Image 1 (cartoon, rainbow, N blue to C red):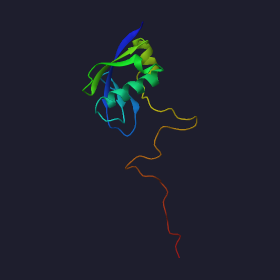
Image 2: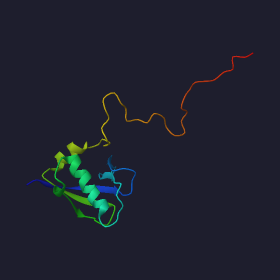
Image 3: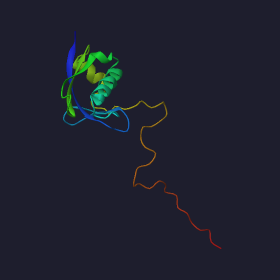
Length: 123
């Protein structure tokens, strides 16, 4: 059976659970909404990774780091290359957008929303 370890950096108590992308150090950055209490964040992490990788939740286990933010996650049934392919190695992972929609925000904080100028047409 294929099995490989995945380095993960987790952020508990996030606004929503999502896979953020790959960090410069090669670890996968993941946010989970669950708090780091009684293994809730760990359970949310394994559930999210299993769903993303299309595996049973029991195929994704935490091998090391159950009490820290940096974890080694064991993924049974996939090789390292298959994991990187499914998670989009080098790409930011997030919810998929419907065709014709952009994942970019409509406007950025601090940036002007419009370049329209208002002039008084006078008296």
